[in-house]
Length: 442
Image (cartoon, rainbow, N blue to C red; front, side, top):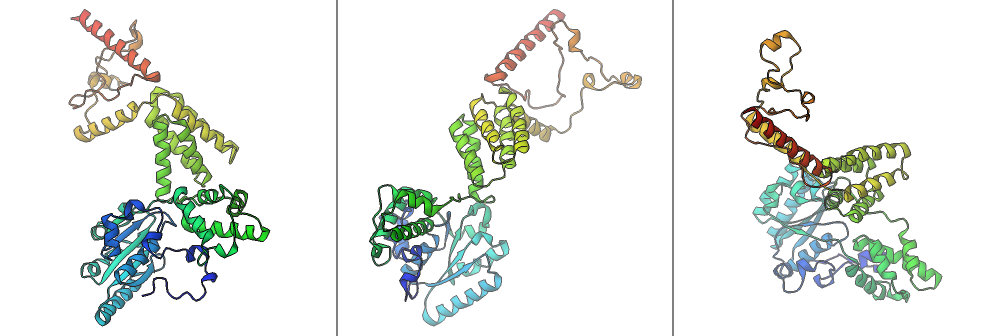
């Protein structure tokens, strides 16, 4: 089988297609999986890697690796896209694979792009054909397989996580493409000024296909001007960079996770950076504000009660100013939340109280805490034993605030930071006054 089919006019193809790796040695940026000496590389080269799920962002080599695996193992290579394929297409592929095996004794590798778009029933349709060897499946997905693929399919395929390609991986690839006379731009005789290829690699956002496309555009401009390829031409070719971001995918959750963790860890530079990344990529500013507001309660709480007020003010400011001016208020909020003392005491108290209620149910309100607006209610003991704190010279009431029969003695435990330090000191003082009152009454 020809790895990439007949290529009668190589020059008519885009640079990224011409430079598609023809061997595992030409694959860049995935050394953690395929470096020489690793068991997976050896199995791959023998065509014995089995069914695989390639999980990673665009342009990191998922399709190429599937084609290489087919070539190494002598498979018949078939491809489907889950975007427009259905059960009928799967059945047709299975039948074709059976005929290939019966007539030629040749195994079939099915490459299924965007496999996460198949529903459970469509995914289950593969299972018997993987088990009897009719198909070897290689799926490609940009989504987390833990969430998008069912357990039965995951148990029969190995998940390989492909990383975005860094500048250090893309820059040598671009240099090779610029010099390669047969498959690259070498026939143009271009030279690149220092920093130009690194700029292109940086602008590619980890995507080899995008990097080579930018090189082809920048190279064409340099050729037209009979000039070296410069960083300015690289930036001109890129135009307004569109940041990699999928509101429903892993990028969405990874970025909000990074923002939340930087706020919690008091890292304002990180909080500002990740917040800006989300806004620049087109995330809904109100979503970012909602998450920051949650952080103001969950991670800061009463260590700085003003944080929650600032979060609400930031929302009002954004709605009043709109984009892009109002986004500064969002950044101000993110920086503030990262810079103030942290406490999850309120969040922990809420979780503890919920767990207590789940275990012990709706315990009755103690009589001294019950409402007693009528004479009848008072006759039934509602309000008996209640102490009005303002009637005490210290403003301290010595009574219990919880029902009987609870398993947890306390829920809210102020931390020794920020405003909660004063809360803690005050509560300790109150408890001391209660002990004194009990001692006097004994």
